[in-house]
Structure formats: C-alpha cells, structure tokens
Image 1 (spheres, rainbow, N blue to C red):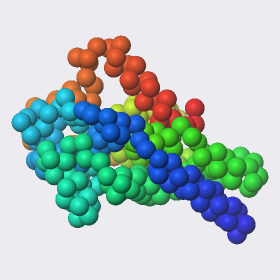
Image 2 (cartoon, helix red, strand yellow):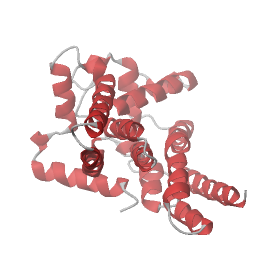
Image 3 (spheres, rainbow, N blue to C red):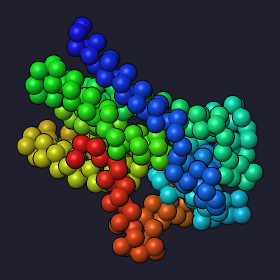
Length: 288
C-alpha cells in the first residue's frame, strides 16, 4: 500500500508539473504566418475534420501542404480527427476550414493542453509506472525514484506542453511494446510498437532493437518448429496492424505513395531531413 501511495505521489507531481507548464505560452504564439507547432496540431484537426481522407496528404485548394501539411503517419491523423470532433462540440470556430487558420485564444489553449494531458494519463504514465514496478531493479523506493525521474523529465514536458507536441503517445506505445516483450507477450509487444511506428516515424530509431530481440528469440526456439510459428504469428500481427492503420489509403496506389512521400521528404535534401529527424529523436527519447 505504501508503494502505491508513493507511486500516486509521483503521478501527482508529474501531472502538476505538466499543467504548470501548460499555463505558459508556446513557441510561435502570436507570430504569423506559421504560429509554431501548436498551430500545426490545430491545423491537422481542421484538415482531418473537414476534408475526406484521400485529401489529407495531398496538396489541394483546401489543403495547402506548405502550411503545416500532414507529415506524420496515419495514426497521428486519426488522433487529430478524434480531437477535432471534441473541438467541434466545444467551439466550431476552432476547426472551421480556412477561417480557423492561426486561431488563438485562452480557452483553445486549455483545450489543446488538455488533449496532451489526457494522452499522457491514458498511454504514457501507466506504461512508465508498470515499467518501473516490474522491470526496474532495486528497492521499492528506488523504483519510485526512477518513476519520478522519468515523469519529471524536463525535455519531454517542455516539448509536449511548452513547445506543443504529442511525443508521449509514440513513446508510451513504444514503452507498452517493451512491457509486452518483457512479460513474454510478444504479440502484444509487437502490436504496441507497430502502433507507435504508425503514430510517428521517428520510432524507426527504436525498431532495430525490437526486430533483433524478436528474431533472436524465434531463432533460439528453432526456426524449424516452434520458433517458426512464433515468427509467423509476430509477422502476421505486424502486417495486420499496418494494414488496418493504412486501410483508408490502400484503395488507390497513389495514396500510400503520397503518404510515404510526406513522411520521408527526401526532396528537401538528405542533410535537412536527417538533421530534423535527429533533433526530433533527441526530443522524444528521455531514457537515452
């Protein structure tokens, strides 16, 4: 009971620090014409709510890709759509097509901050607590201290709540994947990490350890028997998850190609692309 009380205190401190940062401004506030990543997330809600799926990643009269065009995988777009439905119920002006560009208000800022906090509570924080409880060595107090360090990691808090992003979603899903593998639930771990990869392409940096671990485990079990069937089940889990995430874009071959083009814009030049990816990776990875 004492351990859970300490963990609860960690969560409370983590949530308090997050919400305290939320009261401050965000990068790009009041700075036209782009208004920063906060506006990018709001604009994605506007696009996904008002436009059909097949236009989300294409440059059209209603979707100017030069103005914060979608460049994250489909799961991010679906998340934006869910947030947009809630925003529409609270205030239609927040996601009104074209007219909402650059929209800023105190109430909208609180809504956007709340969406980040909700995903933290739903995905990231439970994964951190379970990871520390089951896999961290040491005494109960050391596990609590580890959880507190992770939950109060300033880089993630400042990026998600100050600058404004949803990195905790992909990180939380990746951590659920680690939990799954650690507990021997390889299919669940594969599912969780595949969802993380379909939320943010930066999770490719974490994909090699997952791949090597699962492949090595299957080889150790024997590829002419149990290991082969386990590898087949893992492969099927990954393929089905990808297929479900990408299903709305599979009706036309141009759709997935355009999505991939948006996710990996090599046309901007390899140096710029790799630099931006590396910076995002540093922002997103609190445990390295």
